[in-house]
Length: 349
Image (cartoon, rainbow, N blue to C red; front, top):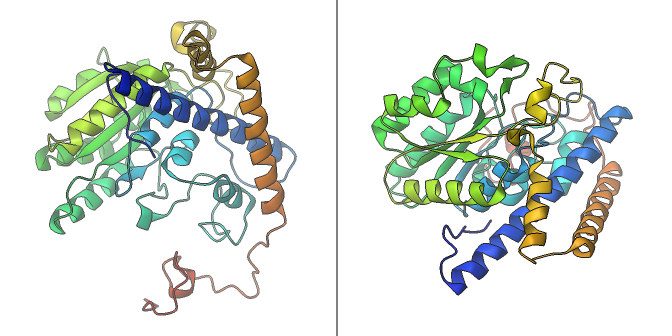
């Protein structure tokens, strides 16, 4: 996790912004190649359940993860692999969840995106339909009651979630309580297969914010620089005690809802429009233009990341799955399944 510099004005700030950009790009690349590996494992029958890719949304996700710090709270969306990695998740833990390793954060009990480490502020997803906003609100309120200051909570949702009651109630609560919440909306044009024209009648999702008394920023979700600036400003706004902020990022999901979906419903014209750009390629072009990297460097980074992923997958594939005959299938909060495996915790059962 890094603290994003919002404006590269001075030479010192410019250097730090470059460092942040490079770190965010690496998380984007790592997430893209890791997603590709999970997709290949799913197609070969090695992963059971769904695989959901973040293709096209990595810039927004990585910018979110690098803008947070220890003590903050992050509730990622199903396409937030880059943000998860930037917030501190390891490749091994991501692989352990998908492959059902008993050594993973969910102990092999849950697959794909429903994983996290709540004590570290990394929340397992309940649903991508706005349900996590109120969970983040609750933690931020708990911080207030405990006089813990300076923390920020980020909840990621898609455009479809803005049509739910959970979104309305939680955003209204955050505004009334002036919670340090940043609500990041990936407006990827479709709620599964339902286009935005069938989801809301307002001209733009940003038009919803004034009704809640919430400030809003709209950003090009394909541009990593723009995402770093927008998310960084929103986090700084919340951390300064100025209440919640909404960030609407316009982009296009460059894949199906999951690997089971061929995305045949996506309008071909969107794919050739500016919002259909591949954010990873856009970031790489920016790196070359700024002379922060060249083709050889980019190829080296890709090779290094591929090796890191292959090494992690190979290790996880050798790890044991839960033993159904030895396992006590109680709640994950039970003593022997707690995140720390501590022996001195009280068993709620």
